[in-house]
Amino acid sequence: MKNALLLLLALSVLFPAAAGAQSLAPGDPAPELKVAQWIKGGPVDALDPDGTAVVEFWATWCGPCRTAIPHVTELAKQFPDVTFIGVNVWEQGKQDKVIAFVEEMGDQMDYNVAIDTDDGHMVNDWMKAAGQNGIPTAFVVQEGQVAWIGHPMSDLENVLEQIAAGTFDLEAARRRGEVRKRVEAFYLRAADGATDEELAEEGAALEALDAELGGLLGDGESFVAADMIQSARFSGAMEAYQKAVFEDAPAEEIAEFEAAARALAPEELDFDDIEARIREFAAERRNQMLMGSYFDAVGEEGDPAKAAELAAEIEAMDLDAETLNNIAWAILTEDYVVTRDLPLATRLAKRAMDATDGEAAHILDTYARALFDSGQTAEALEIQKKAAELAPNDDEIAAALKRYLEAAPPTEP
Image 1 (cartoon, rainbow, N blue to C red):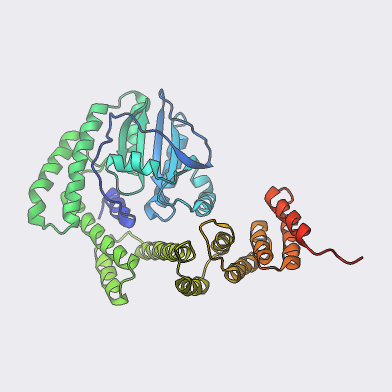
Image 2: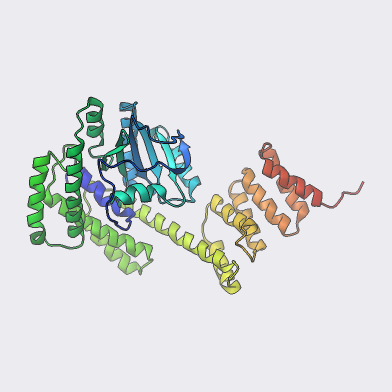
């Protein structure tokens, strides 16, 4: 497959979202910019009604996003008068992971970065409203209006050059956007199994429109129906493979879907890397479902027997220190936990402390809380003192230390 954009479109199935009716298109007023947290740069309270902005959507698990991010950084340097904003989506509650990813990217991700709101404002009012179901996706906003929507590796640079030169044609962009919806429908038909014969007429019509409009895909790429069909079939195979992995299907079934996807994969694609990312994301989702079931079981209408069974599964999991600490802290402090398994919280917090060599103040604080709530005040006091030494300016750690000191039995003279 020669067309790089088609390859990236195929890989966007890594996180399919339910398609909805399109209500946001070039020429429409841009939706409100509203995020939960700024990770890098910012804050950007609102888009400049007299300026240009690029709002790009991404996630840490998205391979094509990782590929596109350095390109967006280069564009940010090339167009310093344009405001560039990367919005992390579909990862609410994973701020630590998002922050770590941005730090890892370093100068390769050198523009404003934020996390979507807990209720998914940016996904709903931007992505879904525009009928966009895959990432990365970028929006260009010019003087308060959506000017362009597409993959950041496609025509974004060309659009920004035209805006800078004052030659951007919004009406042509609007029409091109309408035709692109036909391209997407064509793509989905091919992915769903339509034959070459069934696709031939529409494919020819789209190739003609591509020539008339000077390109539907952008970045100098011509629409070639055969390439789009191949990309779509690979996309369909990848979606089936991903679904089998997410649903923890029998190994033989997963292997069949994997073989089918590999057979359709472009030669330049590192399929092993994509496979690893899919399995990692599936494992994270299963872990989240397990945690949700556990906290339901220890809630007001919980099931103690089920909770004990799930607790054993959690303890058997190979979890990182932050996850262990977060689970322990939730068991110890969250109001929705009615039955607090203090021994489990203590063991998980101890594992987190050992994994960080006792050098993380917030993890020591959790372990001390577990010991204190379990009646081991002297031991809790010693651990909390270490936490206070590591974080002398942390008011919450200091308050906990004071509470443990007050609760400790008086020492003999």
